[in-house]
Amino acid sequence: MSIFRFKKFDVMNNRSAMKVNTDGVLLGAAMTVLPDDKRCLDVGTGTGTIALMAAQRLQACYSEDYMVDAVEIDEASADEASINFRNSLWKDHLNSYNCPLNSFHQIPEGGYDLIFSNPPYFEDSLHAPEFRRNNARHTAGSLSYRDIFEFASDNLSERGRISMILPADQETHIRRYAGSCGFYMFRIIRIRTVPRKAPCRIITEFSRCRCETPSDEMLTIQNEGRYTEDYLSLTHDFYLFA
Image (cartoon, rainbow, N blue to C red):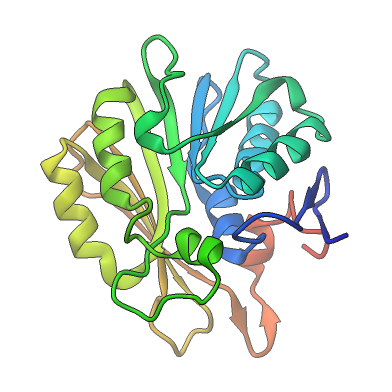
């Protein structure tokens, strides 16, 4: 049995089409979470890791009246997320739903305060040979950031936010599409593996409010073969080694 152990929860990692990964942990640790985020949605939850991280962070805000819903199109992944939720300290605050985003109708009154996702992002590259893993990684016939913005345009609260992690080369496209759906970037984190390399990922955050000067941050994961202090500080509450 494959189990990924965090400081405050464990994640069964056997059946999900997409395993626990660095991108998901980065998003879960870095996205903006506020004490009054009462209703949150994880789109394409996989093992449920990011939803669990959100629940841990919300609990740390001394919030009790919150719920994190998680949507997953892959049945085995949704089942595994449900198990991980039930085995966690926050089992009463987490729900897993096995359905496509466009068939999800359990929307809370007033919409979601936070929608977050580590969505599939490969569009033109070679597809993975295994069908379920392919669906988890590629936008064709699956989920894309466009679907998330379109869903959020109807189901995000007026003060709500969208947080996603994507390849760095999609920044222009995601900004443009967000704008067409009525959303504006207020924060971006550029992620590079080492100082000498260009950023490979971005965490982007959007709201309905126009922001003239979005917060623009840089996170470097390693330097001279060691994790940076910034990375260890960001993941301190989650990774055992941090």
